[in-house]
Amino acid sequence: MGILVGIGQALHLWFRPFLVACFYPNIPWHIRWRMLLLQPTSLLTYSIESFPYLFSRPFEIEYLPVWPDRCVRALVFKTSGVAKGRTWRPLHIDIHGGAFLGGLPEGQATFDERIANETGAVVVSITYRLAPEHTFPAAIDDVDATIRWIQEHAQSRWGADPTLMTLSGASAGANLAIGSTAQSNCQPSSQVGPKALVLFDAAIDLRLAPSEKPRPQGFPKSEPLRVLYPLFDAYAAPARAKHMDDPRLSPALSRRENLPDHMLFIIAGMDIIVAEQLAFAHRINEEDRKQAGWTGPRVETVVVDGVPHGYLERE
Image (cartoon, rainbow, N blue to C red; front, top):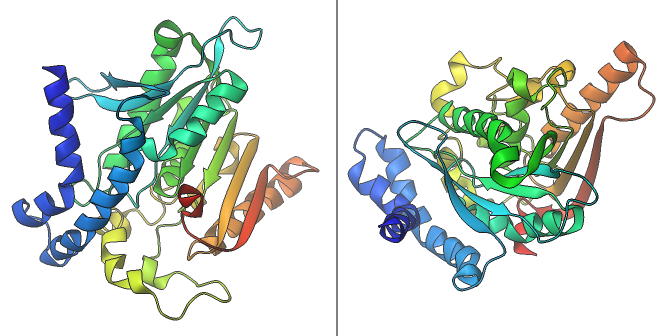
């Protein structure tokens, strides 16, 4: 029965764009027809990400009972051996990207496996509800609840230490990773708050729609994906007017006091979200220097010139 449920969930995910376009009349038509355009890309992407793990995989698939009425699918990476001399292994939580519209944790399995192998950490790569069916705050609500559940159960379930937790995320997942610091259990005042964040192509300022974001110098004048921009905004657009100052939607507004001491941004240089990441890093580092006397940067940035959003997933 479990296998059949898993197959059903996989098929639903792989054909979500088609199903949403045809069977969700409450979603505006200008979103639904664009979902149809997304279907071929979704099938191709999910195939590339999933097929390498059909018969052998470096992770276990678990369904975490986070909510009374549904579970959260997660990939758990745990290497053999001991926890690098510790009683409990470090804990790392990774959050996949996909413009809040899709994505699989399998897409980041190579990165997650490397983290597990090189640090001895238990790595848990989690999922969340997707737009356009589920708009803000569905995704961040899921991530908040899942992180809280993992903090409470990591030791008994996987032998991982929630007081040695780090977070990472890509694109939308990076937004959710930083956004989670708005909850008290993910702040420095909490014993189980994350000790560091690693963020790839972080979409952290959703106050502007994709079409309104500043383009970096040298950005192509022709934007083939422009037709999909309303889709990329489907998570934030319905909530934007009421949540312009909400750091759970736009983590660029996060308060320095709520952030861990170590943050690393890996930034694709040919991307419409370059400016918001650099502005965030500059603000936090300046506030640290002026208000707390920091001499070094809390937020470090690495800009990879000339590469597009999501380039690491194509490596």
